[in-house]
Image (cartoon, rainbow, N blue to C red; front, side, top):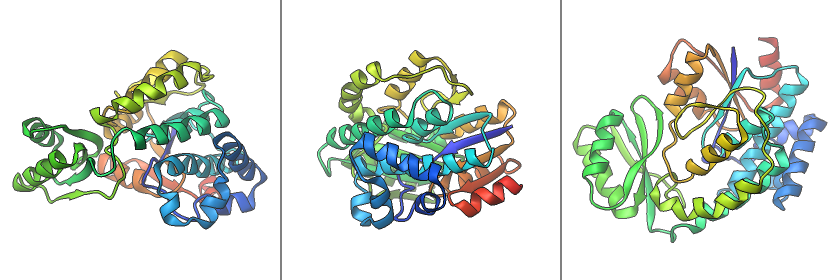
Length: 304
């Protein structure tokens, strides 16, 4: 069984999706649809940047969605489709597009507003995130619980890699405690907001009415959601999963294990980056992972 998985914020890079748009009318159409819905010229932003503009959360989220959708369109042209899907944070929206539960225009409009709401939820500099490497998740959870202020695990990426998020001082204190507890690295990340923690509750509240009125259909293939790593098909369950993931942890490792338990043995990372393929190697070295971001990648995957 084949799972398509879709990257989230942090995977952005100038040039992402551009080769697909240049090679395929379907990929260009994906950029056009996402641009029209988001009110941004996403192909120009991906082609030209500049990087600092592409890194703005309100821009990053629809840009990664469009670039991933362009690759997805080329995979469809090559006759490749998934048996199940999942996406990391904003990648869950692209996963829903792939599953037929949400059209691309709806997803692009939603993720632009989602990005804006998340950026505006916390004053710049008041929050932070840190990557903790080489410490098990239970120890990281305990340290967060023992630290004063708001700090919680935000991303369970793979064994030995957890990202924490919250108030800047609390994140720095928890990172220092993780280093003292034996973490190989505990590094504050260059992000603009503390995503996937309770500080994002105002963003979730603003997104709730948007999701309530968004047209969402029954998913045609299983979608493994971030918030609890369970399978969702039903529109109401999808809405709740998308709402909860704004201010709760992304349980990526658990979601991959759910896909493995369903029988998925081949994982195609659809879109920019390659982080999800790297995580897969840590979660299950026996699973096959392919990072697919260019026309050449699509051709190689179709041949395989």
